[in-house]
Amino acid sequence: MRRSPVMLGLFRTVKADGSEWARVRWAAGDAAPYLSRQMYQALHFAPPYETLPARSDFILQHEDFDPAVDQVEFAMSD
Image (cartoon, rainbow, N blue to C red):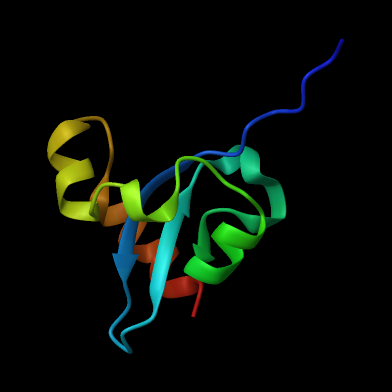
């Protein structure tokens, strides 16, 4: 039996306008790298949005994550 891949979120963040977003893995395809909270929940990503770490906590825990590159991607998603 073939299992479908689990789409994973990395962290949650808030844009300047107050909208909530989830950073997802590139394996999410066209959805990557950011999804609105509503889309993240509608597509059944894991873990639940409420349990995703904040962006600042994620960066502290993952030394290989480049926040400068991520900010450029986030700004381009507007």
